[in-house]
Length: 314
Image (cartoon, rainbow, N blue to C red; front, side, top):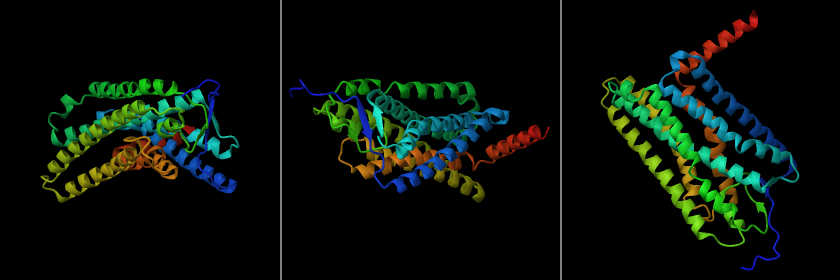
């Protein structure tokens, strides 16, 4: 294709949700409240684990890192989406779009690494309780967490580098609220099957390997739980594992639909709804599922609240 004389795209238009101005304002309020609740819920968990020395154990270190990740993850998309609800232009620069792409995907991959690590921690605690303190020390846990973050942020620079060097000559309209590989590849002036295939393979490997590791861990956990003689103990373990698996299924189910084949032809409306589930809904409900139902975390939050009230009364 002859690209001479063709103008180059310097910015994109994120259409977000196409609806009337009144609905846009209503969506702004809805997502703003959801955003604040997500920050408060996950921030409370981070503070509780940091300030209460009784929670300085591998399990709660993982929970605190997971909550911190959710805060970072939601900040890659929601602030810009809120701005677009009230904006007339809805533009994002070429550079900002690909920065959002990079951090959005890196945070998502970090989550796919942390979730198996949390499942492995539960497996060790329930199935290998005598060996757990020796295997999962706080120092070893922090090293594993650091490895998850570093590895995740090294996964997508090369694919993104090649996508940025594709010719984008217009149109520049992305029918989404985030810079996503599917819509971006669709806007390229030339087909890029190699880049699409490499993104699909990379996403598939990360998603399926981590998902099957989680399933294997919880299968072993449930098998061990079935041997517990106490009915109350079994119910508690089933409740915990069931809620965790529900969130894992929601997260992995949605990203499988989106990224196993990034240009598979999903309708734009379906793409937006599915992306909302794993980028906004799961960070909102994860504090309830993973931590705020936990008696130790709730006790730490009550202690922090009491200390705050005492310090304010002085």
